[in-house]
Image (cartoon, rainbow, N blue to C red; front, side):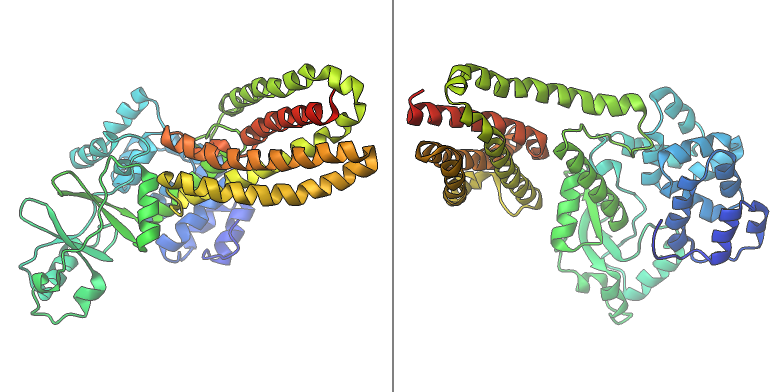
Length: 451
């Protein structure tokens, strides 16, 4: 539960005591501020309690809370509503929230829900659903405020008073021509500070950052972070304004993308939903295939050990240092992979810079290998003598160079072939590094010890 609370103490007590009838007397704070916090409380409620709380909320607060609820709470609550309640709720949701909700149903049920929408809302929702699931088009809202360049500031204010109440945001106003093509984006601050008789055209500089609806939503996150935007206009090929993406949606997407990367880094296929919204079969499906792949890759390591079985039998002391070597290689590979994945995701490095980075990391890996190689040599000398010290020094030196470069190069390769580079971290890079480390270790041992 959030540490900072907007909800009155009386509401928290009502929820804790389950005394739902007392909600009628509550004086609610700002709906926009308290809705997300109230939605969190539904996570701690079950069945009838969820329905009781939701049914007693003010109508406008219901809409905001419903949009903020997770799917495993939202769907059961929706199914308990009467038809007229469903109609009222759905037709008052923001278009992007409505399209997100409809995606939670299969195609047949989604069509049934579409029949509850008014023609205007249905058309808007169908327009959003035509775009790919992970695209900007799915998350945009058409509830923006447009103005014309020949208006005065006074006329803009009149327009805002008449049309502004139901818009997603008024922080940015969009100047469009008679065909709906975007000409400029003006901050409300700029409008407010201008004299009333000033023409909109006099305030324009025609510098506007836009994105297309087909673009991946991660690109929208990157643009808004890079240019510190609260709103991003979405345009088609003809520069016609289709909708806007707002910062609240971007923050949700950034969190979803971070969650997806964490899951990939742990060799878990992205769930696409919250943990509680995912069925047990979905959890198994996301984890078993990767674990199976890693077992197959691990066969390389066991195969390498088997191939050098005779060498191990002759010089048993080599086996003592296998965990040390593969752990060092795996850790080095994971470090470099994680560092490069993050740099690629933030745009700090570009895919075409791989050669420059390769040579830089070659030097870095050599310096790490030299330092840790000397540490390994000292340990090998005390455990097995000078020959084993040489084996450990050379092995660690080469292993740390190779695994460091592997961790750097693999994310670049995955980026080029359009695969999320996050899969290169964690278990995958560690498993690959293990096999490479063993191969280097035993070949060095054979050459130095003559076994």
